[in-house]
Length: 308
Ligand SMILES: O=C(O)CCC(=O)C(=O)O
Image (tube, rainbow, N blue to C red):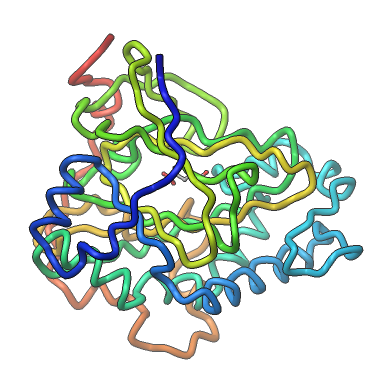
């Protein structure tokens, strides 16, 4: 029987003890940090996300903008193939607008996130520029993200870690993220096609797994390695929009696959993303480093270390 444990243990106290932080990461395959990011900054990003959706008429004006209530009738008029664009929850033009937001990208460089990964890796950190936002609008077409391992989608070094956080408070019924404790030790699992972000679901052998889940507040960050199985929980609030970010980090000395340096889903070129940005230092920051590139290996999806 799989079990569900409510409550991510807070790893914040371990930031002063790198060995203990690494031991916990090795044991669980994830690390959770309560209130790691400033709440007001996450809420400012929320405001910018919602203003973007409002421009397209998808926010219900009977509520405060920051409540994140979708105009369900307007959303229902969006064709399925548009709303499921690249697993982002919104059609391509809206996602292009999201990718243009300077705060969305600059937050990936927040010193508190960098500190987590510097401590974890024990060396200089390379934040991937391919930042991902999901704005899961309430629509039956927006399926929950299936259980998966990120490595299949990212490749490069196996030491890529994701930082996932909701852009706003996110109780369990709003569909936040759940992980299987210790699943990074299962090896690379065989995937099959599935609805939801990424389009691939790992085939879990047996069902003796401990899923962890919790309510999140704005500022909380869940981090996990590229082999840790995770999924999103179903959106059970019929008119709410669940918004989140996925940022990725790796030890700077290790290899990276070139697609991780592109804009997510190739919705824009970087020059287009950067139009009107104030902070020049954030533009093309990775080009100042010597990177070891490794090629995309399509066969990785099909060479399985473990099949049930
Ligand atoms: O936020 C989600 O629904 C999925 C995030 C995720 O699993 C990922 O990007 O790897």
